[in-house]
Length: 527
Image (cartoon, rainbow, N blue to C red; front, side, top):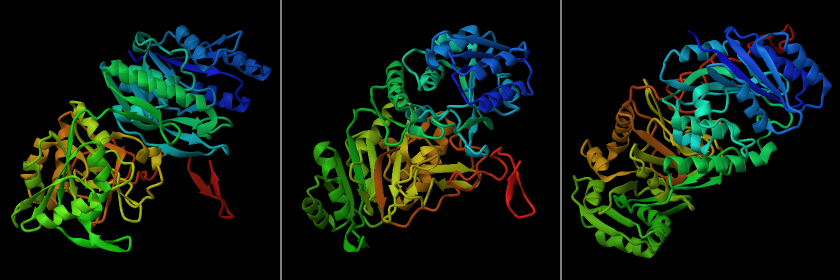
């Protein structure tokens, strides 16, 4: 039998026309087996009372009225307590469901292992038009710790919602994030539906319109993530991120890290100054080698060791130098001298950005299912070289290449640690045996392509590849335009996005927004 849905809505003095559209969006569902549980949190507008009274003429609508205002969590607790359906679905009092929302989700629950589902969503602008579709990845646990990317439209089996404790007092404004974290900890499967099933209204005072409207929500969200980390055994501190709605989970660096440098000992002009690339790199690694006591090993051509040591000394950078034959790999020679399990291969035409934390990047490898960790890379003009790679049947494509480094990107991609389809091993962190296997596949120049190939293999085997903004490198060598070495879909991208790109451009007609026509005067008219 198809599941029965309990749509939960807490109501507190919304604009009348908005509330009417919310109620109608449930009433007009193509799927008929639902109940709409509405809790009026002591609204003062008599028109709200009238509309809710009229809504009860449909036997599937049940209204509970609170005598005193308790807030969103209290009202949500009351709504859950009144629910009788198999599946709980959350709908805010000023938002709307797409007509096929419940029927689409019902089909997903044909999989008996599915416990939680979520869809893509878009925004309803103040002028009534729909915009800004948010095309989400498949379940991305690291991203969920750093951002409630799931938000709307989320449904879950009522049994598991009740088993994890439902809504918790004290998390107002972040109650959904707190609940989703606990649900995903317990769920057998979390399934993403790549369809815009929810329309989030940008109403006055809403987070959809003004992310700063509910500052308390971010403090409660930080606490929700902190408690989640404690429950799943992640030792970390959690801070509110620079962009509202994001968090920073800081894992302690528990392992020593060796930075391996391939240094052909070339010079070049960067930012108007000609100097050895190794000198620039060494100066940027000074703090890292001193404060963390990290190991730095530089592979150089035969006969260049003395000059390399002098450049390190002038930069105040502690490191060792190993000479390599003309036909040998500079990284392999450096790796053979490393004494740590975690390594970071770096090209000499790179520079660590101020404030970057290589240790924080490498700390993600403490998780057994994380195989590699990448980081942000910038061009000399402070545009993005890549934020990881999107992989599809056309190859691997650098994420947001050419965007301004100061821009957080769509969905704040560049501001949060997250799972990705692939990373650039150069500048990233991985275990030494994995790097050894990569270098055995080809020369130093092939390491990026081989790394992308290995990422795809690891993800297919059930591992995760992480990208983080906690470490940022400048690179002054020619940029990597993408690779045709991967032929697989990317679960951390979205099927509604254009193939062959890394800029989150939607495929035509996939936004779900109402089409427009041209009036006689040439002005666009939205239907």
